[in-house]
Length: 113
Image (cartoon, rainbow, N blue to C red; front, side):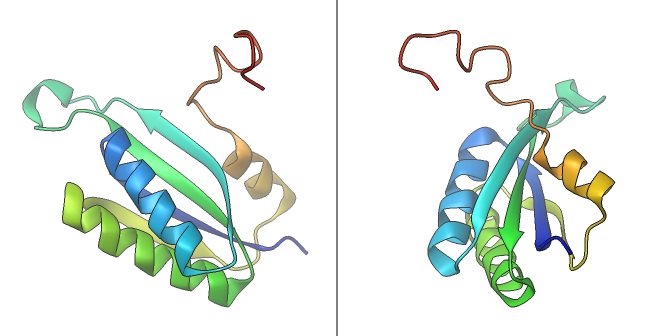
């Protein structure tokens, strides 16, 4: 069975990096992806980029990491939602590993593995 997956969705990339940092420091987890999208009402919101961090590890570690990420993100721009999936299916695992950040440049820029 796959390890637990935690997802925290928030406004802004800086908020996501701050939240991912807090999550990684709070528990023995791996940040498996950072994903972004632009909401339909982007012109009307203060921070128009929605970003999600995806965390993986043992259930208790993921829960602690998600809590730390939520606290850190709320201190910057706020959290939209968060969730922990304790037993993801193979298809859920594949979706969690997908990312939009850097997809177009990773491996195409020298020294950018």
